[in-house]
Length: 171
Image 1: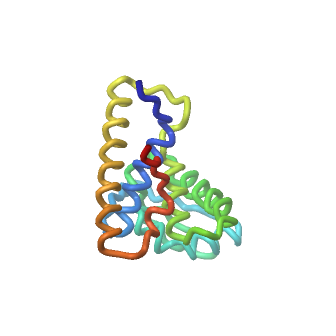
Image 2 (image 1 turned 30 degrees about the horizontal axis):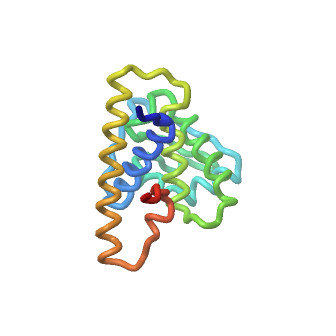
Image 3 (image 1 turned 90 degrees about the horizontal axis):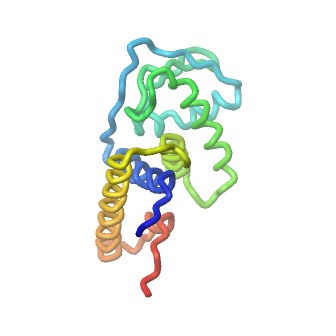
């Protein structure tokens, strides 16, 4: 019997997906049929302007469109159509919340925020097949990260990637 917290499991899967997309510059963007205009308060507009290169690298197609205004041309495939504005606003709020945690860089905070935002929520009912897929994908992600961890330790003295991953201690 294995008990898996579906939200945390899905966050972990998405974290690895977005981390890979960010570092490999390969991302999937769902272009909007009708671009959405987003007006923000000055502090949020400044923050979005600062995060724009990283947000674009994660699959958003967003551009400045005047003072404190942006146009959203596309989003990562995980974002439901019609949710573009809310997705960016929530991402900014979560990023501001994470900003007090200085031990992580801007990219790391952004990847964590987007993973949390797009993850299946706790309590959301899943079908048996969805649960099995989630579990199998998580298992694959864990194996891949562990293999990658061994290679990094052999080839590098920087354990940066693995400070954010909590592995169970062997008993």
